[in-house]
Image (cartoon, rainbow, N blue to C red; front, top):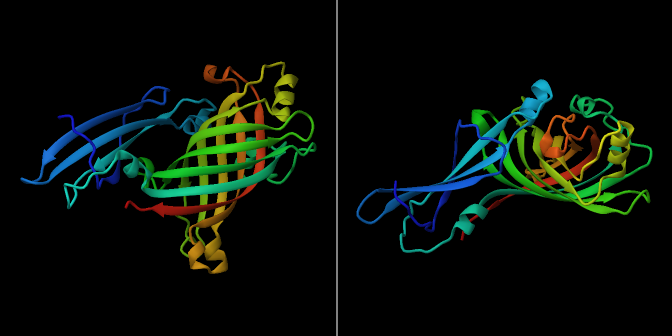
Amino acid sequence: MTSAAFKSGSVLKLANESTLLPLAPVCSVSCAKTVEDDFLGEIHCAIILNIFSGIIGLAINGQFSSFATYRYEFNDYQDNPYVNGSITKDLTKGEWYWRVAAGRHTETTFNQLVRFQNMFKPEERGTGLASVFVGKKIADNFMWLPLDAYVTGGYVRRFEKGFQDNFNEYVLGFKAYFSKFPWSDTIKTRIGIAEGVSYAAKVPFVEGEHVEAKNRSASKFLNYIDWSIDVSIGDVFKVPKLKECYLGWSVHHRSGIFASSDFYGNVNGGSNVNTLYVQCHHNVMGS
């Protein structure tokens, strides 16, 4: 294995790695070069991204205990070896999505919402949020499963109805979608789950009440989960141009994972916000 520079014309590939790594958003880069002929070479550069998927452990035993590793390969085999490019172009190419959402807090527990129970039971004070998310696709078959996987980030505006000043929240996470339902050829339907971290400029009023009732401390920095279901707008209304636009429901969840994580200050409590959203996917082609 030898060091090699990034070149133009790279095509994004993904290979899963089975190694499980400890909690830390660590990135590492390694490169290898193999010669195809006298003129063209092939450069493989792997960026290892460790994004925790604690929802697996949470679903099994209520503990944040499982992590996953993803590997990106940039295959630099190109027809014209003299064209210059950059890694920025390679990283931005491919499928992206944007999502806008809005909703209100609910007193329904997350366990009930996951089962689609009491989905529209708003919290009486009427506090809520509006958000904008973007996502970048990283896998078509995540962990060899029929799941589309994305890295996602979001800006959230919290509306506190006068109980305190409104404020911002920021989210970074990983989201996977399952869409292989028997009827998806007619109306594409997806269920999604996201796992990540959330930082709020203030502790939401509802969260403060929950932890105060348990004589526990609150935190601005908490675990983030998004559970969603949506359908293709294009399929429902027979508009091909909107095939990859979706109308859906999701729950925006923040919590300390039942006080099981030192990483989140052992917070016992959190909040759930029912939201409705529109999400559209687009492919960004290289020039």
